[in-house]
Amino acid sequence: MKKRTAVLLAFLLLLSVMFPSCGLKADEASETAGVSRLVTTDYPVKTARTPHVTGSYAPEITVIQSRDELIRYVSVYEKCYDFLDETEEMFYDIVSGYKEDYFTSQALVICVIHSANSSIRYTSEGIGRSGDEYLLRVRVTAPTMAAAEETDWHLFLEVPDSSPFLRDSAVLKVRYVEKRGY
Image (cartoon, rainbow, N blue to C red; front, side, top):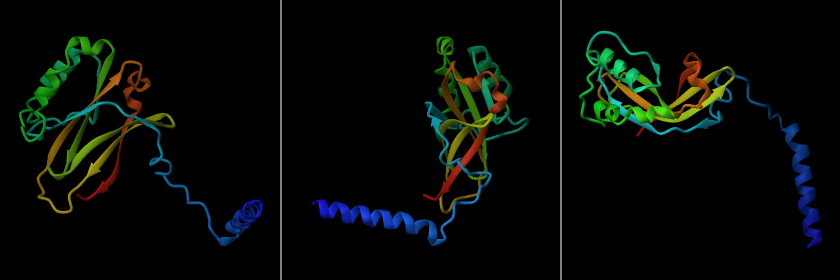
């Protein structure tokens, strides 16, 4: 048994000496380095398909901290988007679930995504910190073939009031990750 352990240790030592001389080198630094390993916090998320109809586009990220702010958001953009689209969970059904008592300890981060194809699906992978920014990671899942019908999506992330990016929502950016076919 001792002999087998000694042989195994000698083999591991030999491997560790050989690796640096094999010509392997570390990956080059890139602007996306570390993004795939970004530690994120998952938050409950709801998604509504909301095709753009006319007028202004909503900001990509909006932080809602009260029922009044949510009502104001809806009243500003309800003529611009089809909030009655029934192909997914309906926008109004989601919004009506957030009463005043919800906002006593939580906030909503609304992410609006413009999609070139209505078959592409978006899900949140949470929010993580990268330097001075917070990145909302959105997983994009695209079909291998689909019709070119543009649409928009509203993602509602439910975050606790203690989340640091709520104090300055300008530090919150969207990062799209891993386009895969289905």
